[in-house]
Image (cartoon, rainbow, N blue to C red):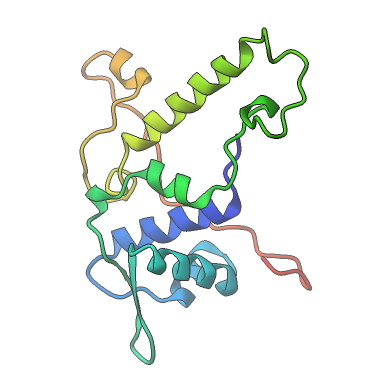
Length: 172
């Protein structure tokens, strides 16, 4: 499964705003920091404002800020709100399923369980957990529970790397 660019941008905006709670953040600042198009970011910000996650202030000296506490924003909820299709296989949609194996196939159940596990992991993490310098509750994963005490886990999410600049004549 691959997340859309829209979801990627949404998570970047939220993480950046959570890391800079002490001030207003501008679209221009976000675009420059992440190497993204201002137009794409404006769509993301408007959507997040409609959802009540961001406050936007227009005009000179304006910007945006996170409205909710980062500890209350689950990553799974953000992904559900921004992604449009979680059908991993054809048979997930009964209206378009034409698979001849459906009556006896057990693969759908395996993928269904995998998707449930995916969201269980995402729901166990908050924006605070993913923001440098902020600490929410630790995210328990199957891997982390297997590790011995004293062994340090690598950072799961670091500051996003800047995108490559778009080629001339193409929008990012």
